[in-house]
Length: 158
Image 1 (cartoon, rainbow, N blue to C red):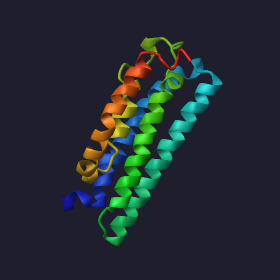
Image 2: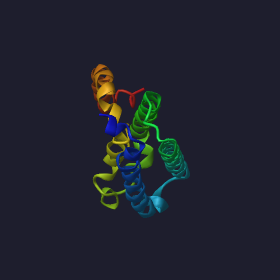
Image 3: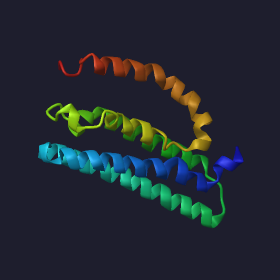
Image 4: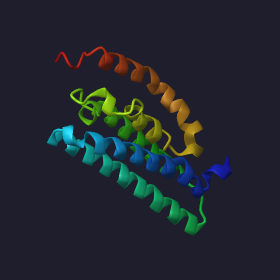
């Protein structure tokens, strides 16, 4: 378990998927950019900036820990988990602005709208996944209820 606390694991587990995510979203954004409203472009910019800042923070932390020859701390795992879970949740809430229904489905690759949750979800610190697995199990029923309520269009009726 201690080998996964080495800061070098931040690069393949966190940074590489985020770079791939930027490439995938950048490709789709260039295709649909002309069809987006200004508000949607602002949302794209906000999400790209937030993800970029989290990635830069992870890189700086990993480099700092590598230079000090220290292992990853539990504090980093908690902060990383909270930031990435909130990013994924916010992404799912705002996904209609990022990929509005006015854009033809053939212009967007099918899996792109799911990539945010997949790759950003993989950004959790790998070494502390088992610690937080039990915490996430507590929130799983609430998440399922929220997805069902959101999918049923309850909030759209308000």
